Length: 200
Ligand SMILES: CC(C)(COP(=O)(O)OP(=O)(O)OC[C@H]1O[C@@H](n2cnc3c(N)ncnc32)[C@H](O)[C@@H]1OP(=O)(O)O)[C@@H](O)C(=O)NCCC(=O)NCCS
Image 1 (cartoon, rainbow, N blue to C red):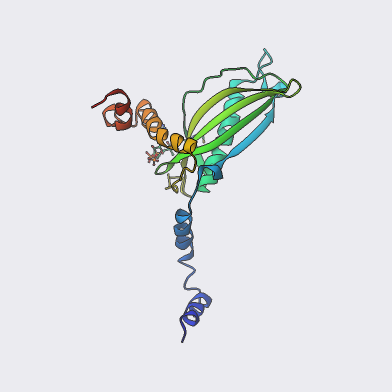
Image 2: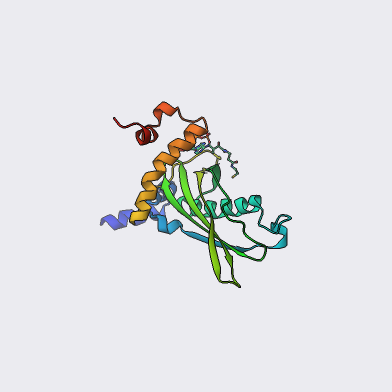
């Protein structure tokens, strides 16, 4: 009997059913992924309920939107639920006024084992005056979770452009810095960081 006949009999009798989830996750990990696939652009109009008594967007509201945009970028990469593990230093360089448009751009820079770093840029825009200004930049780290809520492995990401490669390379240093600051790595083990300061 030809091979495909055996394969069809196997398929029809359902013996492959048990393998399907494994096959799917195997193929999922093989698929090549690029930072551009995770690109997110999110816009919000700053309304009275989003502002403080000075008529500026509240920092907490901005962080909420940043968290959402970055989480979407991370989920586009791993296609599973994620949690925010850390937010690196965020400085608010320019206020965003009531009635202005806010735009957040988010993109994955690098995937590690179960965690992913997302880079965000935030702009304010006065549509009447046709004036757009950069207000924030930040890095957020997300961890992918399995159905039991435990960290799960994420696929690799392959940078395509020179800028993406720079972000990818820098992600290792930033990761070590945040793990040292978060008490999850000993400073003496942070090779990439030490190399910045100590030349052999
Ligand atoms: C983030 C969390 C899942 C890590 O779980 P854990 O049991 O400590 O798991 P691990 O030690 O195996 O770490 C898993 C990954 O998280 C990373 N991680 C943990 N804490 C981190 C931190 N503070 N900053 C950056 N990355 C961190 C680890 O480096 C590891 O990444 P890797 O697998 O790519 O190397 C867990 O601490 C958690 O659930 N925190 C609460 C998340 C949350 O509620 N967020 C806000 C609402 S979404």
